[in-house]
Length: 127
Image (tube, rainbow, N blue to C red):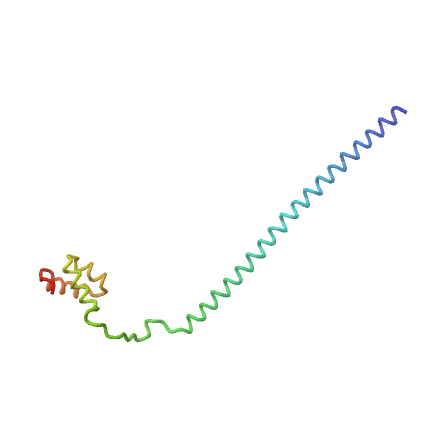
């Protein structure tokens, strides 16, 4: 009877180990499946976002094709009052000692205009 008892204990131990291994593999597989599901959700979200961005790009592209470019439009600006003209500003900058290149870039006038203003107003007193 003693041998049968040991045999049953051994068999129970063997079944327990097998059952534990099966449970471990099942849990591991379930965890892996959960990770795969999470990755699949992320991929689906990224695909949805990419599709939305692509649609926006196509929409903007279509709008820009329909809208004439600024270079083809004739820009008519209101006359600038004399006190606010870029030339008066350029004269002030020349009197402050800025170079013709700096004056041209700050006032939006050509380099030749800035040089002319510099030669005329460099050493003249302020009015």
